Each structure stands twice: as C-alpha cells, then as structure tokens.
Image 1 (cartoon, rainbow, N blue to C red):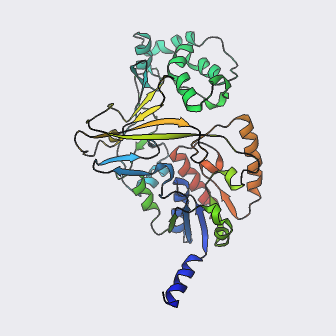
Image 2 (tube, rainbow, N blue to C red):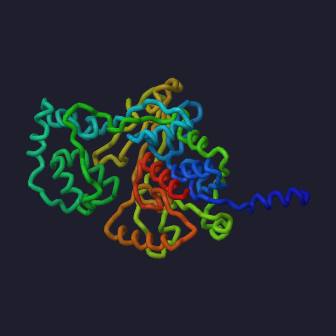
Image 3 (cartoon, rainbow, N blue to C red):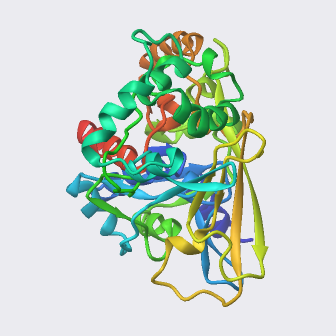
Length: 381
C-alpha cells in the first residue's frame, strides 16, 4: 500500500465528528438522521452486526416472508407528526393488530372485551351490562399491595386467573404477589366487541420492513457495525464533540453501583410446510403449562404480499434472563433506587448524552422512542 493510501485510511480512522451515537436502534437512528440533516457530522457505532436494534427485520430466504428477529413490532401512534416522519422513509401498510390468546385449548380475543367475557362465561351480556357484571367479580380489594391484587381489583379473580396470572409468571419468572402494583396500571375491559389491540389512529408496518426504513433514515450517515464501544471507549470519546449513548446505563458505569434487572426473550424460529399455522400474526398462550408466551406468524403482518405457497414461518417466544439481551426492565424498588444513583452519575458526564429505552431503563413503544429522540434533537439545536 502506498503512503498516500495509508494516510487516507488513517485520516478516515481518526476523523472527528460533531456527534458519535452509540447504538443504532430507533432512538439512535432518529437522532442521527435529524443531526445529519441539520448539517452535523455524525457517526453511528453498533455492537450488533446489523442496524435497527430490536426492530431489525429480514426476509426469510425463499419465502417472501418478512421476519422480525426480535418479536413482532407494530407501529402505532396518535401523533400525526411522528406518523408522517416515519412514513417519509418508506411506505407503511394498513395492518391493524389483533391479538388472540389460548386458554385451556380455547381461543379468546384480547384485550378483554364483550366477546371475551361472553365466550369465557358462556353468557350473552349486552354492552350496558358489562360494568355491573365485572364489578361483582372484583371482590373487596380497595388498596392493592401487589400485581395480583391490582389485577383482581380491575377484572376479578376468574379473568385474572385465566388470562393474566400464568402469562405473568412466565413473563417475569415470579409470583405475581411479589411483583409491584405499578407493572399493571390498568387492564382495559371493553364493553363492545371491538377487538383491535391498539386504539391509536395510525397503525401499520413498513412494506419493505423496518430495516429498509432505518437504512433510509441513515442515508449519508456512516455506521460501523460489530463495534463494542467499551473496547475503545477513550478513542470514541476523543473523536467527537458530543457522544450520544443509547446502551444500558449501568453498563456505561461498569456496574459500579450494581446491575439493573431486566427480563429477556429467546426466539425459536421454524419453517413449516403448511400455508397457515394459526391464522393470525400473534397468539398468546396464557396457561403456565405451555412454556412459551407467544407464537408469532409473520406472514399475517403483510397481507399485501404474495408469499410462497404451502410455506409459513413461526417464531416461539420464551421469556428468560439474559444480561446480554435486555428487553423489559423489572423496575423493582431496589432497581429504582440504583437507577437514581446512576442518573446522578450521568448528569456529571458533560460530554455524554444518555437516551433511549436502555439508557433510560424504561420500556418504550416505537412511537415513544421516536418522540423522545425528536424532543432531544430540539434541545440539542
């Protein structure tokens, strides 16, 4: 290699940026797009070998089926600005999410609605009778002390036992009596047969998948994949004016105050030689004796596409503990105390900006993630 070429590679390797963003999920990608468009020099580094974070999607070879590697992600929002923003990077379909749940080999619609109640109890209640019926089932819990008591106070012991208890134990690997009240803030009971899972006005998925959308967001932004920020932390800090960190906040401080607790998920994927396995995109399994919580069948997310005949993909979802793949913050009393201490440390990091679900130790829907990133951009400009 001649000296000129060597010098070029060295200059590229040591190039300075206005912002380096650690993590290429929706939060990082949104900020990268906004900052680049405002004229800033931006670099994204990502530990995984792909962009998109947990929204990453890919086409399963030979099927024309778009698979969400980390579980089904439905974009939904009432915020027209956010909807217009994501649609500017790729056309979305008109998918409306509906969830079914299997309990004792019988299928019910979720969230709990008039159809669920009538089917479960073998009744034919009318809409105006639902509230009075559920009120009789709730019992006398007025000051719930844990998740179980809270759920029973909202929907009654029978519906809780059928649809919430077993699923919750699998999800959190914990007796619901030991889980805090605020995990369940509300359990909506619809007094109609309306069974769309979300009430949001705008719903859908990118027709070409989330990866394509995020690639479009990152046009003009260099991204280095398979790069662990902590392997060369000082180098990356030295190459930027400001650094935006979207990873776990406790990892940033080397777990010096202890680990925050997360639940994770394992996905087992299968290709089946049948046209349709379950007739819906997501089937919940409420019973404790079924080891998985959900089965995803992604072909149902894209009814606008033609898929390979007599072929489908299913993905079984198994909750478990894995510090390397954090999904859901446990948010126990001790976690909240530790988080406050980490947040105090974060405020002392003058060059580093923390944001996103991992850094905030919060569960965000996708539209909330984009809203937070757009708000952060406004504060930076």
